[in-house]
Image (cartoon, rainbow, N blue to C red; front, side, top):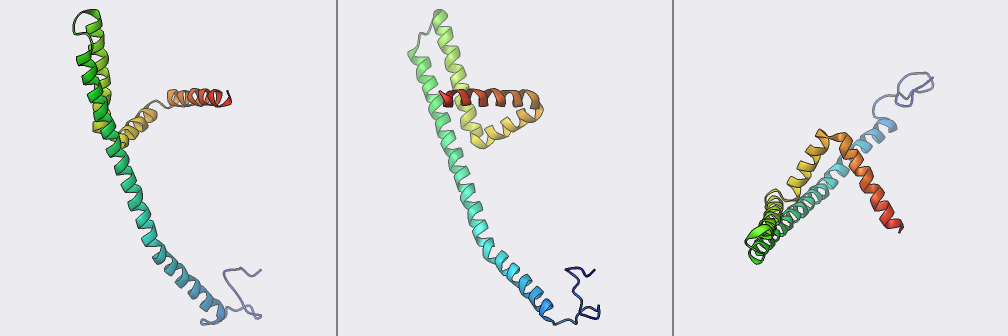
Length: 143
């Protein structure tokens, strides 16, 4: 039985080089190369655009983090300064400020890396949390 990639003539011999098959094979290879060359600039531009979007998202996250820190500082100054409520407001303000600092320093790319690390270290709780989150979203959307 003759194979598709090993064409033979009626006598069972391979055709000589330079036949239509060889010319078609060469033309296909040349077309493939030209296609790759034409696509390369588009792929590069898409990669640059994605990188710019990522940087803008990181910059936006840093700005939000800075705003959260400012809110925490205003909350600390506006709240009671002494007693039980003073300690509670300072604790809440410190926690909010810490979240703002984290967001400002790590940005979205750092947060994604941290989340990925947590999921890798704790896969079962991460899957369970994902299932619970999906269930809650499903219930909310169905309502």
